[in-house]
Length: 194
Image (tube, rainbow, N blue to C red; front, side, top):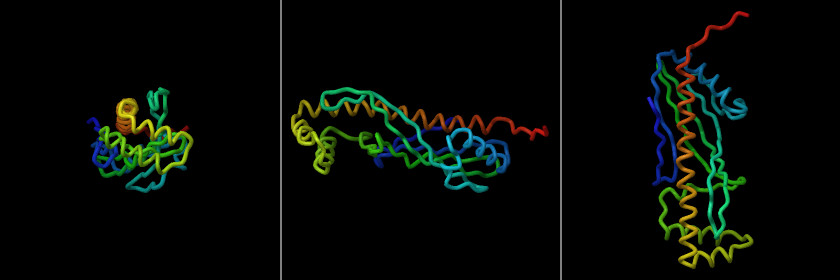
C-alpha cells in the first residue's frame, strides 16, 4: 500500500493521510511506532505532544531547497518545513497523518501561496507584503513590480523555485510514511534475556 500526499491549492497546504493494515495487535503497532519515533526524531521526548495507547502526536521538520531568482539574482535557497505527525492505532491497522505544514527561511514563515497563484495575484500579493514592511530595498522592489517585464521575470523565477520545492516536500512526506510502514512491517522481536 503506497501513500499519496495531497497538494490542496484551494487551502494552500500539503498533507498526507493514509491508513495501513498490518496484522499486529494495537499494542504491537503502538510499541513499534514508539520505537520508530525515537529512532527518527532527534529528540523524541521534546517533539512528542501526545503519547497514549491510541495516539502519538509529534512535531517534526525537514529541509528542502532549490534555486531562487528574484530581482535579477539567482541563489540557492533552503526552506525549512515543519509538520505535525499524527499516528493513531487500532487492532490490525494504524493511521498516519502529516499535516499543519509550515514553510520558513531564517525563521520567517512563508505561505504556500505559489501553489495556485497567477501573475496578477502574485503582483497584488507582493505589493501588499512590501507595503506592510519597512525594509531596505522596499521602494526598489515596488518599482520593479510596476515594470511588467521585470515583475514577470521575478514571478517566473519564484514560480520555478516553488515548482522545484513542492515535489521535494511530497517526496519527504511519502518517505516518512514509507519508512514508518517498513518499520511497522518488520518482525516484532522477542525481548533479549542477556
